[in-house]
Amino acid sequence: MAAGSGQEQFLILARNAHGKACEALVQQVLDSKTVFHFGELLDVPSIAELASAPQSQGHHELLRLFAYGTYSEYQARAAALPPLSAAALGKLRILTVVSLACLSKVVEYPAAMAAVGLESVREVEELFTEAIYAGLVKGKMNQQHQCLEVESCVSRDIKPGDLDYILATLTNWRDSSSDALQTLQNGIGLAHSENARYDAEKVAFDELVKQKKEAMRARDTEDPARAGKQPSYAAPLRR
Image (tube, rainbow, N blue to C red; front, side, top):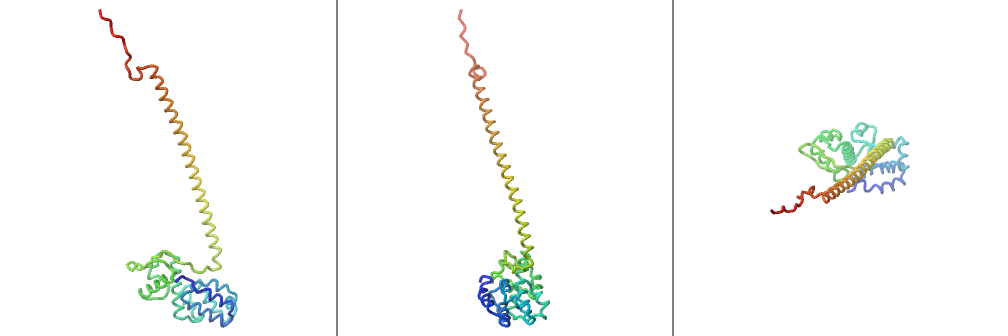
């Protein structure tokens, strides 16, 4: 199943919900097995309003945690936040696995177990399997080396404060790529110049060889001895 499918229906509902209805909608989103990105929901005005009301701030914080945070962050603040269902906790663990996969191509079992609060290999392997089947992570489990080998993964929601860093990183990459391309083009231009010089020198050399051969043939015609031929002599007279 494609990651994030089903989000549109929640966006439509969020635009027309307020107060307690918004809080209930947030709970539904967190429990949903198909929604793994929450940035667009956080941008909906009625959802943003939750942050300004003391009685609903917790739901807004939960949505932010699912968008940008991890299981351990939730655990550190659980006492001040609304409780999560087993389904929501499971999803937050999956999102935490995605965060680990984004940071490293090899996610070791012990590191994952510590990050998601699990104590057995079987449980963490089931979690990896859920992340893979949800389309969030592409990879395979290496049971011999006790790790998840990541080929690729989806990205988490981008924090507003991270946009400047991402733009700066992309700008640096663009500039580096431009420099590399210019260096490559200069190298290609130099190679073309060298090839042209070589071709010109070869033509000049071939012409010189041709002239030398023609000069040698001309001398051979004038002097047979130089061509390796013996000059002819008249037979001696008999007495």
